[in-house]
Image 1 (cartoon, helix red, strand yellow):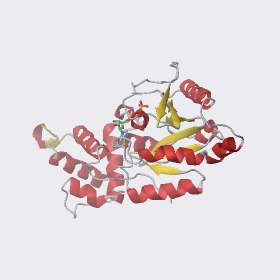
Image 2 (cartoon, rainbow, N blue to C red):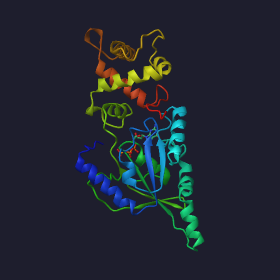
Image 3 (cartoon, rainbow, N blue to C red):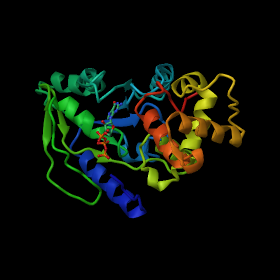
Image 4 (cartoon, helix red, strand yellow):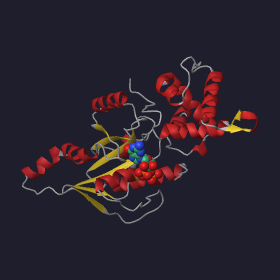
Amino acid sequence: MTIQWFPGHMTRARRQIQEKLKLIDVVIELIDARLPLSSRNPMIDEILQNKPRLIIMNKADLADPAVTKQWQDYFKEQGHPAFPVDASSGTGVKDIPAQLKLLLKEKIDRQIAKGMNPRAIRALIVGIPNVGKSTLINRLAGRSIAATGDRPGVTKGQQWIKVGGEIELLDTPGILWPKFEDQNVGYKLAVTGAIKEEILNVEDIAFFAVKYLVSYYWDPFRERFELDDSTPHNPDESDEIVAIMEAVGRKRGCLISGGRVDLEKASRTLLRELRAGKMGRFSMESPY
Ligand SMILES: Nc1nc2c(ncn2[C@@H]2O[C@H](COP(=O)(O)OP(=O)(O)OP(=O)(O)O)[C@@H](O)[C@H]2O)c(=O)[nH]1
């Protein structure tokens, strides 16, 4: 799915979320555990105002667990509980209802003290495209909910999905735009597959990924692509990065006539393997 985030779409997306906020008690803000900064909406605090919020770091199965832990501590310091989840396998998902209840405990206790019978907690999932909103909704629902496509500009009736006895989830998530303000953010989103490759040049995206990975994850990277430890890999030497991309291409048989490496094909192969977690887990942003 590609959304062209023109200012008009952003305004509409924002308005749609703000309409939904009137219906709910708590927001589940879904972010990518590999990119907790770049996969967040730049205006999130303003958009959500003071709604209680649970941050869920999805795709934690692909992220570096030590870095994810740092992010969890960081968000906690900022006053937001945050938890890692792998919505595709379901790891961590079953704890979400209890965390939502905990967030609203004071409100629920007040209702009970007034003799009221607390109704189900109503929740909304928000996040940027491809962060795993539908996957999480299906996991929480325990069944497959039709992909409803709540795209900016498209209106439809809302339905509530029961999650256990005490939570009700809006069936259509709120779609937010990511941060675009600097080019590195765009490249990070492209490396993780959050934005389509066509938006940026695929060889540039792979170059960006390799430059980052040789800096921070050299051992798993070279092991995956069977490179010798003596392979020059200075991230500031473009020639060395391109030579590594060519070596990966040769390993994967991405060749054109004359035995030259098809760098575009090598880039696609490399990115596909990284995104599928074949190189192992990696994070592209750390809080400290
Ligand atoms: N490895 C991994 N993949 C995930 C996880 N959650 C979702 N995915 C994958 O990420 C891709 C996007 O997931 P969706 O649930 O369609 O994301 P979405 O946010 O609903 O996307 P849009 O409809 O584009 O807004 C799919 O290929 C999922 O299988 C996760 O926790 N781990």
